[in-house]
Length: 369
Image (cartoon, rainbow, N blue to C red; front, side, top):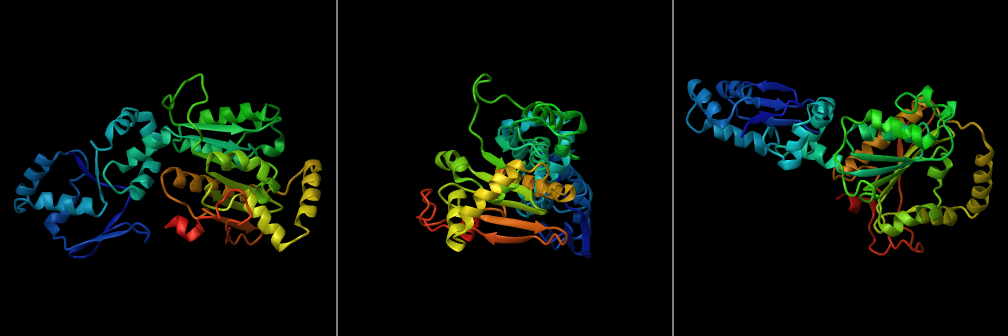
């Protein structure tokens, strides 16, 4: 064992016997009592020394026998300790890829806070590299989401879209000016390759379809399709149990969510039925809006807002892929120009929807617990 105090949390002495690890409340940990000699030993637990050498240095510092082992146990119990030999075979494989470790260093720091057990950061990176995600849409939101997911270590990111890139698709972090005129699918695939930190491991038959997507991110260039998703388009995902996350910008309003867990949370069919219950004119207007959007050449998709939506969407997707349920689960988050106040609304399964999510009566709070 080569223990290492996690470097992601800054340390400060609250008083002569209490150390605080971390600044922000979400992940800060207070450890005490810690005397000065023991506190100095914490600096030596940096991953460069094995336990025997650390015990010898503890004895040289005048600490009682067993104090080092007690400190290591306390640090591990508080989620503050890493081990450069932990994580299993897949994590060790990542350790042998220095170019990947260098690029993903900040991501691993974040993963070490979420997965508090030793080696949790590398296990998280290794798990991401085996995942397949599909992004539907390569506009200002979709392309940026795909680039972030690939850059964060997701091993296989596929972008599905038709047509050719236009100047209006170009955005920092997404498709660049050189992409204009190229097939959208090809340009997005190139962006994903350029964003990825190293070549991901092969999964499944290289000539076959590979594993099913762990997540589909629905980020259409036409924001109306994210605001009022078509149940027919989502039917296959609902039927196959594939989680999917909606995101987009429509008329200066950005939206993230909902993350749909088929059979457990509201789907596109639930949302449509709920809209009709509340507004009988909704189907008539929706037909007109969809027809108008097919003819509309320019969308109101502010670059700052679309970038914020893409970043938040990617963060929610990564949280889900890492094993957590983000705040977009069964919930839609919206922010409109110019104030950009993020507001959320819970979406509940509709009893008449064939997705049957209403049967177990699972609500957003229950899903997150």
